[in-house]
Length: 220
Image (cartoon, rainbow, N blue to C red; front, side, top):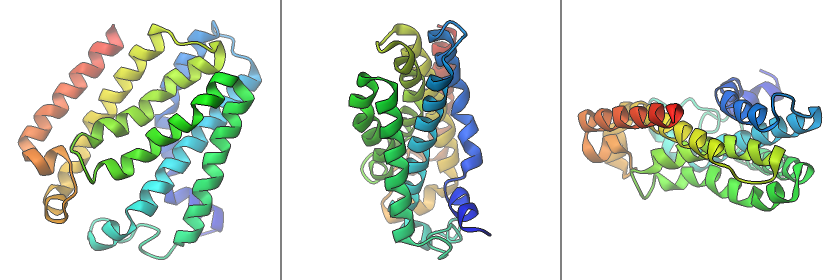
């Protein structure tokens, strides 16, 4: 595998597409269906930078946990495919892309770019302290529609906030399901998830609630 391929695999680059539709919907609505090409370009750069930084940071922060979990021991950092130093450089470059894109969009986006980084990077440590980490992960993806709206208009509005809430609960819902497979391991090593705290059946019940809330915000 090439050097570029290793880093793209580290962050599961192909999954970036799942975050794009909601941001693009917000962008198109804000721009009346005709976004300026440069605005579209810098929004895409910002999203790729933010997600790449977040994924690589999560892999770096969790490399010891991943090493000791049979399900994740073959991930790129514990397996030695990508070095920790290389991952750290990748995170800095990706975060810089986000900040650069925000600077090129407008002053408000630039001022808020550190806040966006705190949110998207914070998930990696939140799961060490709270089972509500699923919602923090959801917020990390959920701020994309607000960011896209601000890129066009430079001001907040109700539509992107509702869309962001829908994304937040949708992501929290499926992440709760995903975490069920590691419930026993997380409980043993002291990581927090709804499944490790409440048990899988109750976690799945809350996942249903999150998905219902997502649909409600989407419809609203």
